[in-house]
Structure formats: structure tokens, C-alpha cells
Length: 79
Image (cartoon, rainbow, N blue to C red; front, side, top):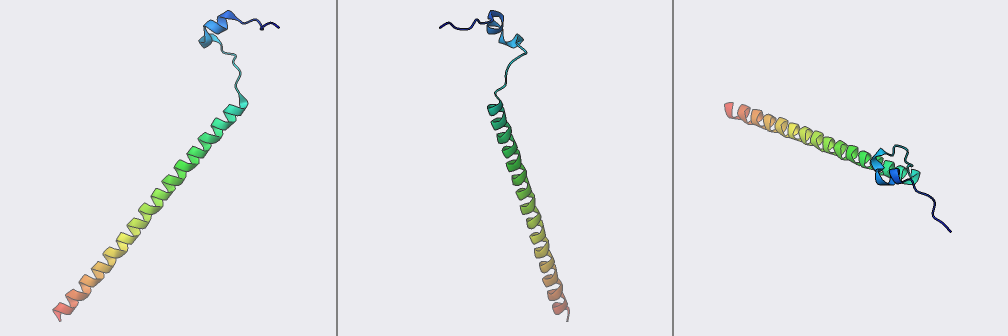
């Protein structure tokens, strides 16, 4: 049993070798992980925007209620 012959140039200078084989399974796994990470980031961004929007709406309602209370108390004092 003998080992197959190796190309010394490719082994000693791996940067010059442009014809390399890609493991399709590893490639698919890394692509899936990247897609999952992207979806997770988008979901977190969406959740952050939703909470910000809710905060702005709630604070707007609070300001409107306080303004109404102020106007009512001002009218009562004037009478």
C-alpha cells in the first residue's frame, strides 16, 4: 500500500493553489448559521423598534392626559 504522490509546489505554497475543493456540507452549515444569525438580528431590531414605538405612544398618552388635567384644574380655579 503506497501513498498517492503529492504535488510539492501546492503543499509548500498553499496560497498559489486556486483549484481547491470546498466541502459542501460545511459550506451549507455555515450558510444556514449565517442566515439564522441574520434572522435573529432582524427580529431583535424589529422588537427594539416595536418597544420604542410603544414607549412613544404611551408617553404621548400620558402627556395628553396631564394636559387635560391641567386645563380642567385651570378652568375650575378661574371660576
